[in-house]
Length: 123
Image (cartoon, rainbow, N blue to C red; front, top):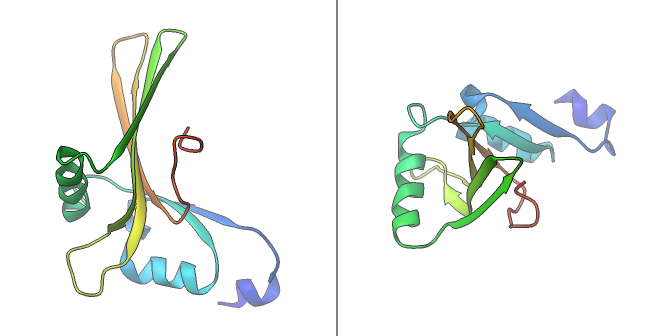
């Protein structure tokens, strides 16, 4: 809590793993006016991924795809989704990224953030 008092004007982005993508931690980050990008995984955030998949089926998420040097980059994003199923949930923005590499392997990563996501900034 001393961090923001000691550095009131410092622009900060907190980058953290999936263990930190929880309501109490994000509330602390917001109270300290710290931006965040937190990793999330389907096994650890079941409700979030079910909600995203449900919204995608109804056309509520956005997609962006490009191929550069035979590597396909695919992005799925949606703003203002509930992190959890509980009454105390908070709303965050979600980004999922797939990379289909030259080797044919598909790698997938996903994050939650307080940044508003758009086709112009997801990459």
